[in-house]
Length: 109
Image 1: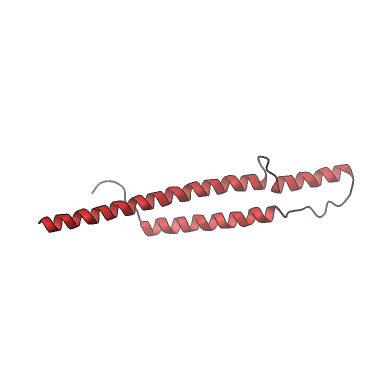
Image 2: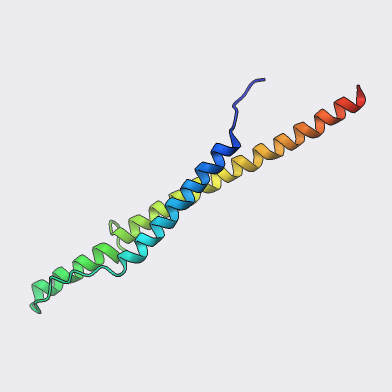
């Protein structure tokens, strides 16, 4: 037999690990929205700007923020999960087809 083999149990385990990582990442994003530099309490303009910059870096939408990077990682995880699921579905369809074809051969013999 030529081609590549696929271990469906290992692939299902990999999907589960990726889904767990995605859940942890979503928890991190929720925590990032709550981050505040409590030590920056002075009310001068420099401190206010520093405070805003810190909060924006954690939970802002601008490129490079923790939140935007986390969303980019989430998108990559989602894409990989979908690819693995599609491979697993294709493998199962091929296995089902091979089982049906083997049954036909046995009946004809």
